[in-house]
Amino acid sequence: MYSDLIIDLSKNPLNKRIIKQATNTHSGANITCGDHVRMYVLLNKDNKISDCSFEGEGCAICIATSSLITEYAKNKSVAEVLSWTEQNIFEFLEAEIGASRIKCALLPLEVIHGALKEK
Amino acid sequence: MSLSKDTIREEFSLLKKHPTLHYLDSAATSLKPQCVIDAMNEYYAEYSSNVHRGLYDLSERATTAYEEARKTVAKFINAKSEREIIFTSGTTHSINLVALGWARHVLKQGDEIIIPLLEHHSNMVPWQMLAKEIGAKIVYWEPRKDGTLDPTDINKYLSRSTKLLAITHISNVLGTLTPLKQIIQKAFSCGVKVLVDAAQSVSRIPIDVQLLDCDFLAFSGHKAYGPTGIGVLYVKEKHYDNMKPVFGGGGMIREVTTAHTTFNDTPHKFEAGTPPIAEAIGLARALQFIKKLGLSAIHSHEKALTNLCLKELNIIEGIKIIGPAKENLHESIISFTINGVHAHDIATLLNEKNIAVRAGHHCCMPLMKWLGVAATTRASFGIYNTEDDVYALADGIKNVRKTFKL
Ligand SMILES: Cc1ncc(COP(=O)(O)O)c(C=O)c1O
Image 1 (cartoon, rainbow over the protein chains, first blue to last red):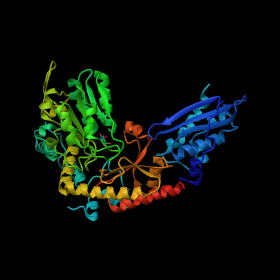
Image 2: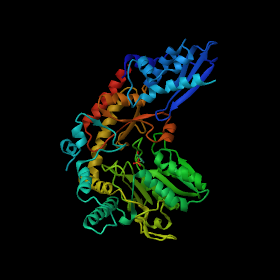
Image 3: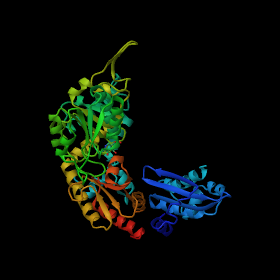
Image 4: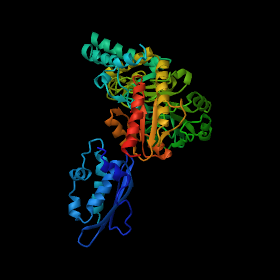
């Protein structure tokens, strides 16, 4: 499960910053493990994601997933990102995450979905 | 029976089934020796019947076994009488029973309950719920920097309004032992009643409720080599005068009319419904198993492993022991963090090496907040653990650091 991709991104995640002029933001947490993520999205006029970032703390799975989501979401339409499921996350991570840790991978997805559904 | 590695592990069929498993989660639940499983199976296979109401041989045998189990528990903690032993479903149930059956009728608005910050949620939430209902106040006892409780600190929290101290014997996160005797003496001299959470201690520290002079004491069967679904509440007999049943139903009554019910004697009036019969029998067997091994032999075995583990972990770079770093101050439980690795990643990677540990807040969120950590990884020992398990853990942690390129 702990590939180089996951380890490296968890240590040096991409897009871990605040977007001051973000049009959409949302936060979420897994209380049981103390993971918390906040997503920042900047939408352009065509409802496309022109920038995406995150802030937060968490386990390697959660941070690597946050990094990958913010990377893959750029230049995508809102509808496309909203259609992502856990299968897309496994593809990004190049790994399947087992039942005991799936919540860690799904938290960033839930948070970006929450951000995109915000008006 | 001795604590030699080969004979003791033979008693635990789970370890035979999983010969490469390093089970380091006994603080969550201990494994069950075959004699406990056999005693419960014997009840189910040979004399399974309900207690107290049957007029036939099997029911009499079940009733005797259930009531003998109560006597075994009473003797194990040196209660004055088996009437002081109530069977519950576990520590959580026991503490809630004190809150709802006793404190709710004795405490008044403005009264204070002292609770150390390191308590398990099961010794905090029931008090918060009750305090809200009756307008009582909870006063939180802050430990020393290393997580231990200074018995003289209780003076800071005692007031004229203090009515109850609810306190753990061993912290399930830090593994620290509470100096109960001194604390209870002080509380006693101020007329404060004391409830002891013995969930983590009953299987390793001798408990004598008369010597301790506590008012209530709670523990679970499943952390003491016994089954799940059974626990004990010890109640100093005089407190029964102010205690009322929380649940009504069969078994707890003497006579019921449509207008009125009279209750059964103590402790039966606190055990409404069909009790956990097989579980009580299993628990009694587990306590006999502990007695036969000897608490002092168990304690020194676990202490040696815990100290070895502290020594092994302390030399690993980036590791931080939560609570006292010194040897000898941990009772079978060691919580730690590794700089740069989340507790859940540690536990998942250790699992890949067949090492079972727990990670998270361990049902102690206020303690975690006080410690300033989101989660810890916890290794805990039982009588079946060996030095092998300790070395596997140390190697496992080195592997975690390697995986994380630290
Ligand atoms: C110190 C302490 N108190 C109470 C409990 C609750 O025990 P149970 O869940 O068996 O009711 C535990 C178990 O996690 C514990 O470690």
